[in-house]
Image 1 (spheres, one colour):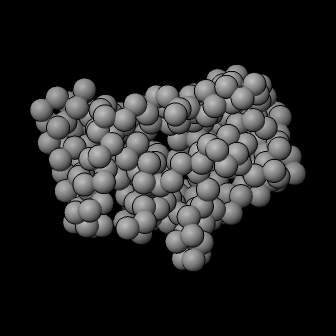
Image 2 (cartoon, one colour; image 1 turned 45 degrees about the horizontal axis):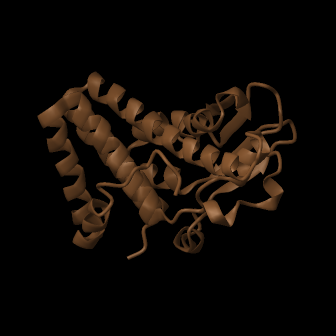
Length: 228
């Protein structure tokens, strides 16, 4: 099977559902913490690759060392990302598969919480001095707006695309998402957290098949803090 953006969003959405249903406001705080934990790991891997290649940790380098590109299934479905510089240094996002998945699940609140902190946390993991901010998202407005608090161009250098050597497929990204949330959930809520982890894995199996759940489990011992 092909892992894609929808499955990636589904995993986060289900963690939001189970954490908030079981633990209320503490569950939401755990979800936000886990989202940032996951994103910081991604940013640090990007920085590690850039430093290895002798690159400065600029916004242009951040854009070049991003770890994903839209899947063919997202393109075929017509939900792949549309990102446009607004001419003033900010980036407008008018279509997004993550937004679509959260919306289709009726989980606007979960999507708003996830998208508010994801990209800014990836950037902080890469280089906290870049000042990445998310002013609004599709969950509550007609577009997402991403900008740099430094006033510099957030799309700097993006015309050259992304470094092929750093692109990871969505099997990897989905596994990373599951195990980041898994680790934080178990650490905070212990046995009850492990029950949530099992529930999310069961949800994945029910929605996408047992093979998908089994594939996530193969990454149990992967160190997502470091690039390969």
